[in-house]
Amino acid sequence: MDPVIIVGAGPVGLTLALALARQEVPTVVLDEGPGKEEPRPARTAVLRPDTAALLERLTGTALDHHGVRWTGWRSMRRRQVVSEIAFAPDEPAPVHIAQHVISGLLRAAAADQPLVEIAADSRLDSIEQEPSGVTAHTRGPNGTYWRGSYLAGCDGTRSTVRKLQDIRFPGRTAVERHAVAALRTELPWTDQALLHRMPPWRSSGPFAGEVTARPLPDGAWRLDWLLPPGKDLVTPELLVARIRETLAGWTDGATPAYDLLDTGVHTVHHRLARRWRDGRVFLAGDAAHLLGALGTQGLDEGLRDADNLAWKLASAWHHGPHEALLDSYQAERRAVVAARLRATDQALPGLRGGGGLRHIVPGTARGHDALLTDGHLGRGALGAPGAYTASPLAPRHLQGEIPVDTPCGAPVTDVQVTAEDGSFVRLRDRLGRGTLLVLLIAPGTGVWDRKHWVSAGVMPRLAAAVTALPHPAELLVAESYPGAPAHSVLLVRPDGHLVTALTGVRPADLYAAAEATVGGAVEEGVGVEAGVR
Image (cartoon, rainbow, N blue to C red; front, top):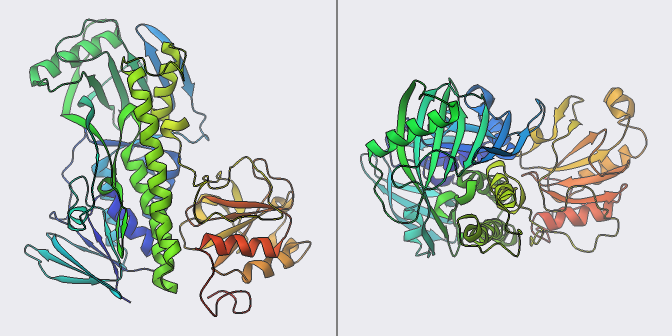
């Protein structure tokens, strides 16, 4: 079968390619550029725990070695600390990392993956779809025709794929603007991010009253100053004056020594593509959506797009297309991003001086700071990973369904589990393999070798039920899971979202839930009688 064509070799496109390769699907990545990304220290990303874990799985590299995992977060208003959060060493925390470093790690992993081919200097100029596949033509030194089973447009804000498919991209322009500087200096705190609103020192030039400081490796920092609405020019002289003023204000004295590494102006747009699927063509990342105001991170959502799309394309590639499963990509991901955009747009007037949040927050600066903290830390309506509660893949009317601390459709909590080979691993390590995960909660199993309990109690019956599911599945065992009683069974999607939690071993409910998860009724010849293929 033909490979999947991926247009765009940024973090989202490379993540999708590696996620598909992890599920034994070949890809061709069409890279418009020369095959490498220019280092830009001021262009960075804050990754939440779920997206950081995704990149670590795909690259085999701990991101702590290349970025900074925050030890804490501090929110200040004038000279007062409004809130301070400290992350425990074993607690999930955001990771701040330069985007060119992310791309470099992904490119290195792709170079070692025989199922991924990267075609540099390949600019897309046409797409033709047929019932059996898609053909893409590129121009440039390596211009040629490429034949694929599906095509994913991960080619950014000005997506050629989106334009060729005539997909509208409505929204708002310049929702926020920030002046950005990456510099190396010594601040009174380390590895802790800071949001400072209305700092007490005198402002100079076209700057609003908000600045953010986020640590990078080797003593470097990224500083972002919110700019007021409009198109006021930020000159180098104004930016240097603001850097010196800010650093002096934070150190209560003269400006400390610093090395300026990079500067820029970051403009946030809010846009959402009308369609994310057109036949065998899909959109992901900035090609499908733009967001990022109030501390939210667009790359996070792009990586979640890739994770969601990968297992569905892999299922179609291996087992034949199932339209309901492929359609669910747009239904799930577009709904989550649309909700994030709505929440941010509702918050903007109040947080930026319009007073439009009085019905949500009683006009307090502390409440506004809490909302901004949510955006920066990946919490609440502004930042938490989306839950597919209204997914068309959600099972209905299960007799034995029970509530746990994770709502159905939300990302599962990362707990230690025992794998089928008897090894102890993290639950997130088993994601992204294209298989469903069936998790039995069995207190006490962690202190015994698997061979002593694999044939005891409910295990034989559960193992038989897992073997009969309409999609490949892996049986895992955990000592505990938040809110789950002993002997309950959780079904988890390949991208780590909870399908359901059942009380005990209920083969009929488990089968019905698995069938719904892969798009409904399965193809003829696949099911309980035929087993897993």
